[in-house]
Every structure is written in structure tokens, then in C-alpha cells.
Length: 381
Length: 185
Image (cartoon, rainbow over all chains, first blue to last red; front, side, top):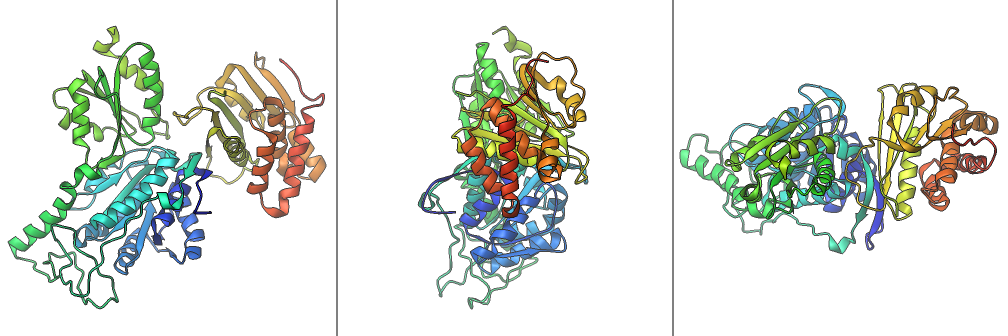
């Protein structure tokens, strides 16, 4: 790839993810094979060695995420890619990553579960797992692309956010977006913003739980710091019974995300200020929504659409804006209702209507969304 | 201007329908259009049913699946029988007439291309039938330029089989000039 010019390709979402990761500066990938995420590992295995990076196929997902965390503490941008069952296995160490403030990117290409479910078929059932998969108090950043182009952009953003806020970031794609091939334009290199973690100066000794994000040393740089997911103070010393040190550490780890939520939250807004019916969608399902909106507008109904590019932190303000004008809000998802409950929580005065479909990877069609939009009171318009 | 042409290529695993779809989609992109391609197949590597879908448009492509085909390529009888209901009224149907023997009564335009037979006669194996079909498709529908198709074939196949693939593709281009093509069934 010539990095000094803009170029057009015909890539799958998984290809775009791997290419973007390398552009973002990822130089370590560890993973274990699983559908429908395999093409990411396949491409990383091919490309990383040529970019002076390391690809490791591990014995399982527990080892994979462990290797990613280790690489990150060696000063390298690191990533893994998996799907539901593998994502479940990684949860314990993802929690380690939140507590130690370890930047890394975890790609979950969603398929159908629970369990091994339908391994090659599309679903959107990991939305809550991506937010709450590991135990206790933390705030996850979760991004959700709806095209090959956006998979490229959000992969780079995932690395940037993880480096900026020193936290694991989850890129939550789905089988449809991962496997579809589309036209994609890769911008010139100088037009792509790349963020690297803050490094310590030789005098720095405070590396954890600071209100402003702490600088991150790497193994071998001589800072002799212990990295532990047990409660620790800003120097990395363990305090496993002190209430104040625990409170301060965990609150600060949460606050660095909460206080910057408006910067992290990203949505596509359509006609939010002047609508009768609202739609909140994300990922592959949003592609049918665009088509449904075109058809509904032909009937003279005004539709507003919030498409979530950031799932977590949940973009509350955007959804509240939509709720101000809408009589009802439709929430289509390829699960049995997950983001639906978030929309309901925020848009509490509005009728929130779920559209759910699971099985065989069948997408929610524009016709099904169209029917729900026109159902009930709005039909007379 | 092309407004969302939906194409389905159906056959069984090993017939190269997925590669044909990828090449077609990429060629459309090289022509400056938008294109989207998906694929699905059974868990066996060969023999189970396989299909590849391509959507080509000058506009943004939203819904990423084919519901009704403007163009159906059926590489065998089962593929035709299964997908006949998914054809639009004014669709184009292209069959590999080596493997498809019964074409039910239909109002769509039917083109019979003996792709597998041509591949077997030319190369001694049926492997290149997908390239013959791509050539015929380009000639019949002109949805992609032959220049872009040829470029993508060169990029997509292994160097040691490139000449054979290109030859098969050109056979397809020529075939569609001949008498093997048939109008409304």
C-alpha cells in the first residue's frame, strides 16, 4: 500500500479491520481461531511480520488476551480478535486490563449464541457482554461500525481511544459487516490521526489511577514498577484492605471515561429535530433502517434516526434529543432486546418499540422496520 | 446511472461462485461504481450448495443482501430450482447449460452458456467454468467493463493459472456472440 496517496479497495470488514490496525500502529496480535473473526488473524499473520510486528497463534483465548496485555506493557500497541465464545473466555483478563489501565483493542465479531450457537451466522447479542462482561465497576468503551469503510475508521479510533485513555477498547462488529466486501477509500497517511500513549519522564513515579490519565512505562525502561490488578496506589503498591485507596483508584478509572463521555460518544444523526417517529440503530441492522426511512418518507411521515457508532458509554444526550420530538422510538436489533432497554431508560416518556430477530443470520429487512414505523398512531399521517 | 442491480451466483462448492462474485464486485469498483459482495456456503469444502451475491449501484448501497435478483447465474440444476422464485419480473437468467437441463416456464430472459463443457474441452477440467460464465455475463449485461474484469482476474488468481483463467474468460466473451444464447424461453 502506498501511504502517501488516497486509494480505493474492495475489502471485507475483517480485511479493513486488520489493515487499519496496522496503520494505527498495532505491532502485536495474539489470537485463537474462531468464526467469523478468522480473516483478521489471517491477515495479521501475513502483514505484521513485514511491519516489524509479531503475530502469535496461542493455545486458547485466555492465553491470547494475556499475551495482548503483556505486549501492551512492553510498550507495543496490541490487539486480539474473536467472537462470542472466545470473548466470554477473555473476560477475566479484560478486567485485569481495566484495573491495570492497559491500552489494547479487543475485536468481537458477533455471531449467534448463547454457547457455540450458530458459528457462521450474524447476531448482535454481545452488546451487554461488551459493557458488563467482566466483574465489578468499570466503564467500557465499545464501538460499533456499520460498513467496511467505518470498520476501518473505528478500528483506528479504537486504538486512539485506548491509548489516550489507557484502557481496553472493544470494537464490536458483526458477521455481516465482517464478511461483506465493499468499496473503501483509505485516506492519505497524513490525514489519519494516530494517538500514542503518554510516556513517563525519568522523574515520574506515579503510574496508576490518576484523575488525569497517568503516563505508562514499559517493561525494561527501568521504572521497576509492579503491575497488579489487586487494588494499588498510584505507585503500584498493593493495598488490598484500605477503603480509601480502593475507592479513589476505582472511581478515577471510571471517571476518566465518564468525564470524557461526550468526546467518546459518536452518533450519526438524521432529522432528529423535526420528526414524529424515531429510530435508534447500530451495526448491520442500521443498513436496513436507511432503506426503510426512504420508503416511510414517501408516505409523508417524518423520521428521525440516531445511529450509534459508540455503544458504550451510551450516547444518552443524542437519544434524549430524539425522544423530545418523537411519539415513539423503534429499536431494531438482531437479539432479543439489549440496547432497547437503554433507550427505554433514557427516553422514558416515549413509547419505545423493539424489533427483534435471531436465527440463521437473517437480517431485519427494511420491510419489517417499515411496518413497525407505520404501525399504530402514526399510520394516519 | 445504475440504481442497485442485484446479482446472485449460485452453484455448489468448488465451482468458484464465490471467487466469481468477488471478481465481479471488485471490477464494478474499478469502474467507479459502488459494489457490495456477500457469500454463503455449507460447512463442507466442496459439494454443498454455495452462493455469492453482488449488488452494483451508482448510489450508496444500504441493505446488504439480495432479496429479488435482477440477474441470476445458476451453475447447476439445484441452484436454478432453488432461486427461480427470487427472480424479478424483468430479470436475466444465465445458466450453465452443461449442468442445467430443465428450465421451467419463465417470463425472464434466459441465456444458456455451456460453461463447464467449454472449460472441460479447453482445459480438460471444469475448474474454469466460473471464468467462462463471467465472460458471458460481461458480454450479455455490460454491467462491468471488460477492461476492469480483466484487470481484476489478473489480480485475483494465482500466477500459474492466470493465463488459463484469462483464456476461459475470453472464451465466455466470445461464446455469448454465438448461437448458444437464447432469448425468452
